[in-house]
Length: 590
Image (cartoon, rainbow, N blue to C red):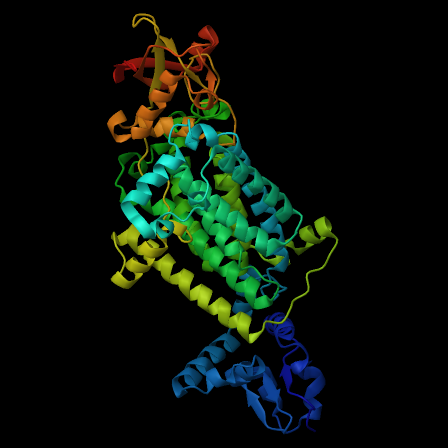
């Protein structure tokens, strides 16, 4: 008897075989029939009975039979790989025989690593959920900028973008458009800056509701890149680059299996670089607080913008701070490698990453970074895990669409391009430089921020210098400028403000770690305060000189720490401080 199409006969009493045969059925569709040997053996007397218990048997339409690894390769349409060399065939058969002799062991390993129901990796529902998350994050990022960008980069702001672009144009000449790819070359007015931010919010809403997705994603990327470059040092944070990289990849999402699968893996590799390098730089810096597991003793009060929970976390016992430091390093260095593990183990890694990001979200103000990192972790799951949730939200199915040859070719080229850039970024961080061709490619594409280097808090700050800006009308009586969110008044409780990012407050934290000479924007800030710029004053909590700017301005540097519980009860203060010295001596316009 010969079958009309290939028939794979397997041992129906073998649990390991049943799990993988069900998976193969999903891969091969109706091109191959399957039947347990207990039902099919009598119809094929040419196959010895004992052969069915030793290996799978593939009966071809011409009546010939393949068995073992060869049958597996043919069933999955990979016979050309099996036949490519005798070495491949012999190694495959040896591996097959080993697994066949230890089926019980591999049955339990399969259950542990994949479960009892294995499905082909699909990411259509995962893609839908990620794009909704990306839309929310884009809306947060653009909305946060909309209320700050004029004070930061407007005509009367701290770092006016039109002056910045004039300097670039004078230095770069005709290549300025490639060096700084921003739409503000054509119009850098305050109205244009504000419009770009609010258009970004509106487009994020369109993305959330699934309208014109590819076009919207492309415009969102261009607008955010333009604002990122216009904002100069105020948009130089790693999460801005991460949003651009994630947004760029999203442009290439498609409906086909090949399109969603390739992009999903590129997101996984982005996650690997982000998570692993964040841990690697901590060890590579040889910072003693990370090496001695004491970093979390300082993290809560020295981080840029603590929140109310940070004050309480700072009081946790030393053993817990050491344990949490070790756990942070363990997750950042270990979990990324689980990305490449079998499905169930990969999902464990995903939950470890999500758990760490949740704790960081609760104990600090890191803008949209934690939300974006969790969104990237969605790709460590798949449709098998997320389809039910997405179907409840959308009341729709996500059918697989066949991939055209053109789609597969385009995805292969994109993957090769992104992989080369990713390797260059890893090499730059770990070795200090990449091979010259990759270094050149990274340099040319760097302004577009489509693949970036990451590594947060390589060195833990163990003290908290804080800049207090003061103004005076007579040079004797000095009144402080209160910022909206950074520490100042000792009785002001740390605030929980994420996912909003007050970019001036953040930049003041970095400025306090250095000096004003290395932060030219700080002198510009002082100038705007002496001029009484409404746009810049709008970034602050309180102007101590309403109606007129001060004659003099200065900056003092203090060392801030959290109060202990007893001091908090007695004084009501959340902070205590001591004067370090002058940061900027008194200056005036005259």
